[in-house]
Amino acid sequence: MSNNKSSTTEFCPVARCVDVIGDRWSLLIVRDVMDGIHRFGDLQRNLNVARNILSDRLHKLIAAEILQTQAASDGTAYQEYILTDQGEKLFPIVVALRQWGEQFLFEKNEPHSILIEKATKQPVPMMTAMSDNGKVLNSTTTGVLKVCPQNP
Image (cartoon, rainbow, N blue to C red; front, top):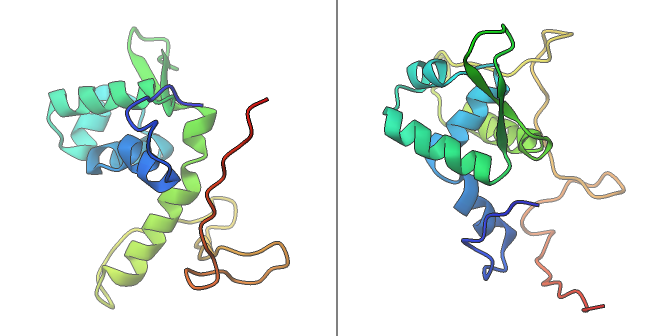
């Protein structure tokens, strides 16, 4: 569990997530690390972000246990940013945002990137929320239940 204490009074998991990864740069950093970009300079060039902003977001993502640093894989003195297990679990969120963007934010023949499965070179199927019995879920078939665990 993350040690991010900024929203411990917030009962909504979505609000807590937005506190941690909800700004443009944090999500794009996570996306780039998922896409194989691991060094500060490479992230800065790819994102075209100011050094101070990138440094701030990297520190926040490390504090939130989404990223961690490790020695460069090529043996140089550099460090690399990699996803933690918790950070890797953001993959479905990034995929869902990507797919929504592909569907609604591009004109019919406008060029854009698509996510493919490496083994088959086929586009990743649309993500869908489903019940245990395979029924497609949406905002009208789901609700929110506040859970208050009992103290032992």
